[in-house]
Amino acid sequence: MNMSETAAPYGTDPDRPRPAVRVNVEQASYAYTARAHGAPLFTLEATTFQARERELVAILGPNASGKSTLLRLIAGSIAPLSGRVELDGFETYKLDARTRAQRIALVHQESSLVFPLLAGDYVLQGRHPHGRSLWFESEDDFAIAKNALAQVGAEHLAERWMHKISGGEKQRVVLARALAQQPLVLLLDEPTLHLDIGAQVELLAQLRRLAAEHRYTVVVVTHELGLAAEFADQIVLLHRGKCLRVGPPAAVYQRELIEQVFETPLEIETGPAGRPRVLIKGRKE
Amino acid sequence: MVPVTLARVVRICALLTVVLVAAVLLALRLGAVPFSLTDLGQNLWWLASGRPERLSTDFRLIMVDIRLPRILLGILVGAALSVAGASFQALLRNPLADPYVLGVSNGAALGAIVALLIAPALPLMTPLAAFLGATTTISAVYLLGRREGQLDSNTLLLAGIITASFLSAIIMFLMTTLASRDLRGIAFWLMGDLSTALPRGLLWVLVVGFLSATGAIYTTASDLNLLLAGEREAMHLGVDVTRVKLVVYISASLLTGLAVSVSGAIGYVGLLVPHLMRMLFGTDYRLLIPTSALGGAIVLVLADAMARTVVAPTELPVGAMTAMAGAPFFIYLLRRRLP
Image (tube, each protein chain N blue to C red):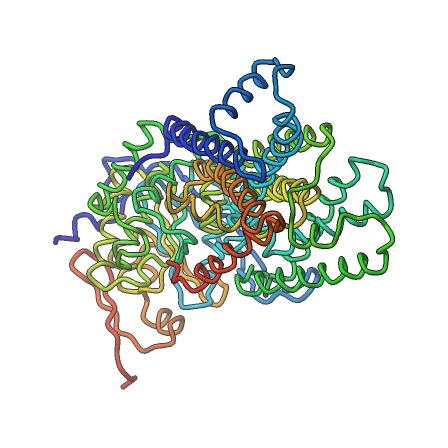
């Protein structure tokens, strides 16, 4: 698979103007407290970045760096303590649940089911924000759900039970449900967590392709250094609730910085497409 | 994958209505005085076509005054408890939830008893107090069932069972210390019984209450499907979680309160019926709510017919019949490995 072409950062081509900003995170911060007026348990300090259509942004950092918090701020499920998080100029947490779900699709780390469900029905749930309160799916909804499954190469899973398919297959079905929402923004929380390396690469390549074809803005939370470097247009580097750097991988991946954030000795090279490559070293020599 | 469409919902409901009519006819025939099917049909036709003067005396006494009202009550109570059970299962994300298991039925019973003690003359006080008892209990169980802000399945069930036994102890206490009052017997509230004749006005309150509460729950049916995947996930798929939860909690408590105020705490119908309907027609709530209502009616009418006849001439409380079938089913669901 030749990655160098698809992996070129979007917007570097002078013949095509850069699309407008879609997600605008401006000095947004958040704090978790156990009790009101108590000392915060965890703080995400003011973070600023922009994401455009067709762009793949990776929120990168080790565990407990505030990645998921930042994703929840973008999703609008929590309100920022200060600053703004906007989608096309609207503050995301102020949108009502239905409108928000028409524009933003969130793919979770874990989703558990109480009763068995067919994968096809699961994908169909993505059509819910486009329906009324009591509502039966139309022919269009079935076609969109079927198409969503096809886009992730999982048509054959439609008649399978969700609790009987493998982790990689499940991840595809969950992504298909997000696509069925026909959103503007796709948010993914650690989508590669339970996948083997082949499935990880496949998923990220798929996200790049979907972003290009459907003009999605894709934001992925990950701690996979190598994958982020290879696939992201932009990296937002977080460490203990602080946003340390925002920019294309080549600008963010500096050895000392990354070593300090991930607390491990590393070597960073530059690949043929100008993207950094990370090598793990067992011990500091 | 068979899609859930309005046509399919109507088709399955029509089928279940036929079964319900058959169950009603069977229940009408069963009893100490036998009627032939032709007699029954003829008399029912006269009754339905507005010619009650033609009815035989036997039929009027036994059918119109005793068996028919009792069957109608069974239909309403069974439907109300099953819809309440299905709703609690989605709200609490727990397949073992049921008004009886969660202690909600006992809360409603306590409310009804207190109303009867304080103001026995006011007829609508009993269902109202039962509703208040039901909402208070479900709120208490919900709060007790939380651990570190998360609803914990096992803690919730234990909280429900403990609350139920605590409330039934209070009911026992009230019944024993205030025994001089004419209350309908302790077995009525603790086991559930359909033998009380209701004033016609109260039956109408029951019908209207049942239809409006079930209707309110049905408007959220597609939201309940998503709520089963968790509140956060449902919210990201466009469900107004706070509104849906409020509507369904209040309606399900109302259904429980109404049912308990006229029939006592009949157990396990709300657990048994929704699961049977899931096995037959799938887990989609757009199908599950109406099928549970009809299925609950069928099951309770048949259970009551059995309660009247198995040890005739003595009657069993219908709650004993449902518990005999429901308790083993609860154990089966508990032991089964869920996805």
